Image (cartoon, rainbow, N blue to C red; front, side, top):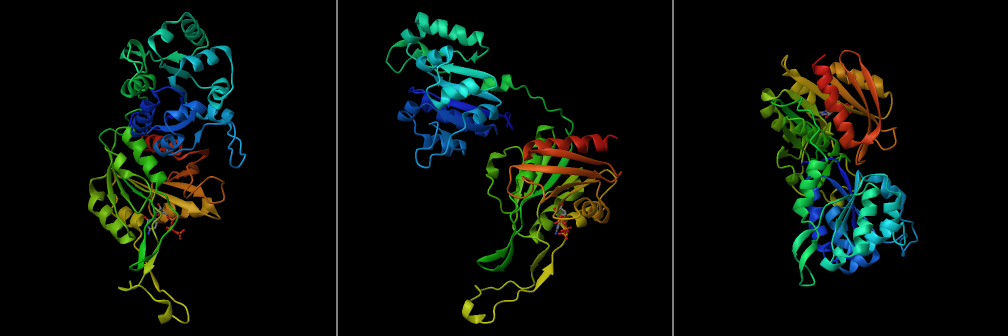
Length: 406
Ligand code: CTP
């Protein structure tokens, strides 16, 4: 997961090597990069936009506007979004247009408005590659500060043998690994971190449950950051839509109910250095679970379900806290946020609490962003801007490091 959190804007031009770009998207996602694709209209003859949107899990821009509903595809925003704009394959035609500032499609408009570094992966037949105009266009792009991953030599789509083959996806990944040097400090190497994430489901009957909107994104973002900073990470998570199989180096334990989450954490807590409760654990569960599906006709006056309190996973783990352990909670509040968070910090005997208020736009459940305030037991408060959950996770992890070394 070398490219965690990196935003790669991929431009795909009309060349047979576009099929390699589909595989490249998979490899980038495996490295945990975020990918958005912009295509020239003709590129779609080689590989459909649907392939790229399915692989990247993001919409693909192919036109300046959507022909069905007239909405505008904002190339300026796309250009600002990427940490890098990779154009692969970059055809002789697109290279020529880039060199002369022509912008008659959305990929070229994105190129002209992009503020991030641009890297091209040329792909063309050997004679086109050797042509004086291509050589001078590449030279121009070089002068503009654009970078190039050289094409390879071998058999080309034309059947001729020579230089012009787009760099292999694996080579491009390797290029990125060198391009984005691993910058995370290994602050947590040798430390064990246990994180709860996602919602819990409390069964009512075989088909119904009490749940909540938690996505688990914040908990997994923390897991990624801790892992990158060298920790040995375990996530106990409720039912989430996240593909947890991609986390090869993070242990994941799937549970459903608050009780199961408690049991899983309880078995692990004594060996942990840090416990972070990012899960939205249901505070209540039905006192009785019906063995059969509850029927309308059997409940003519409606249905009253008696709920009992669940164990508070964080409070229970905290009771077992040793002097070397750190306990960190979350507080999701709708009103009197700071006051309530401070109360939870005290009553649950925590070292630190991460507050997010549902009153802040873009914060809380389901969003990819979060606006957090950190409060620690020494009465320090730190307010952060609205950020991606991945960036917020880095702030939290860095704060934990500073706090534990104060
Ligand atoms: N938490 C937990 N187990 C529970 C309830 C909460 O581990 N049964 C943890 C959450 O993961 C979070 C913290 O406790 O880290 C605070 O959760 P929150 O729901 O905000 O607070 P509660 O203590 O449940 O209080 P209330 O819902 O009444 O605000």
